[in-house]
Image (cartoon, rainbow, N blue to C red; front, side, top):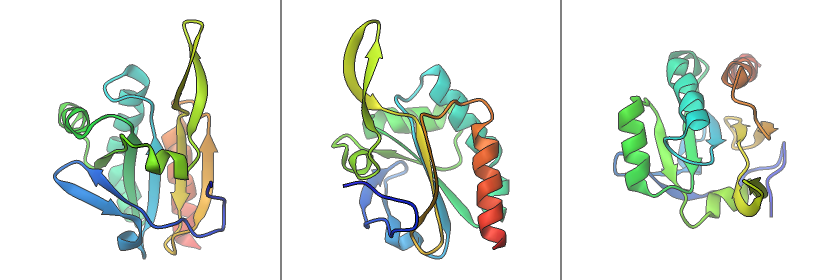
Length: 157
């Protein structure tokens, strides 16, 4: 099963940094950016997270919560968040439940070997809990600005 634009996202609860758990339905009334990244503390993921961190005030002004999700354990997520001074929660999805819900686990190649991994993807969920936009196969450079523009436009509607 995969989510699709305009259809309600099935509710989920996931373990997050700061001894939190995140429940999608509890965020109703706010827009939510859920961005999936392959691995904590790697160059592209650090850059992407930093871009979200640096634009958080603008996302807040657009009534938008940011959540980063990877398959890393909660300890790795906590370390990544602390080291990069992220001002939003990171979700540990070791069992891949959230990743599979959003269909971001894909066959990837690294050094000629195939493995299943997270395809860098971002979803903008509207205040009613429906996906408004999705970006798959994301290239980091300029991506967060594009997501912010979409969040601002959606909030203005």
